Length: 337
Ligand code: UT7
Image (cartoon, rainbow, N blue to C red; front, side, top):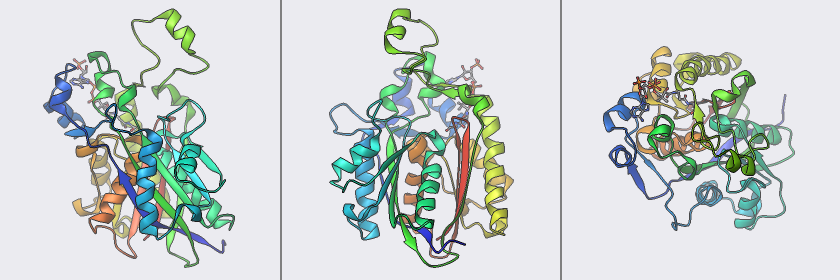
């Protein structure tokens, strides 16, 4: 039995100001508001604009500053940064060290997590383990994405490009000695057999830039994300359900104990499927994909921050986070708030 548990002491989120509606997209690519809303629930998303001063790391910093202030901490109180993203500012190094520099932190470790839509849950789990062992006291977990710069904004890419949006969320994890409070458990999985069903293949050592330029492919350009939508959808609904159940069973909880489920915002239809399966009322599931689209690693911390800001999460509530995405990777976290 660990001496410590970790609890979320502060949450913050940030999205760029620029709103892109479905109608805006339909002016650039062959799509329409009715299709996007019916298939995904999305009405609008945020996109970084050239010159607005944002990047993946910068949005992460903006979300982190709010989370730190709410936690009553200053940057130098943080012992570890865990940064989850699939859209880093640089190929390497990752965004974690940029946050460390931008926030004038000590020479603390910065760890980048590459688990796409499950990135925040993976990051939370990493932070939780370091706190439970007693190695660190305060861990900053960030999920941030700049998708808009890397999407295929032509009709060819429409099934992916209409879905994704930009934004960031952050959580400050703090050591707590109250047993039965805070993060009760996390549950992580992966299935690499399906790695290429939702992937961005290059630039990478398999698809290096000179090679891409030399080949100049007209079709199937590997530096745009590819998604086998229906296959991903079918796997998502199964894995979401499994991993939520796994978390409940591990803690001797039942579905009736869930006060708030924050599903990764992949598709409103996926969230609704899960809600129906677990027979949860509308007030027990928080969705905001309508406003932001799918922000991958940022979606859970943005949704969690909003739910908390709106007073939908109270002391003692059982909060369940669940994610599924590229890898495939999936995971859940069970929290006593
Ligand atoms: O966050 C990580 C995990 N991600 C997910 O879990 C996403 C899972 N998948 C999905 O959410 C859905 O599969 C999508 C939203 C991506 C796609 O919805 P779908 O109902 O599976 O549509 P589809 O890909 O089967 O396409 C149906 C039709 C096709 O036309 P035809 O072949 O029937 O004539 C597409 O070409 O819709 C067409 N289509 C579009 N039409 C208008 C695809 N994208 C668009 C579009 N606008 N943006």
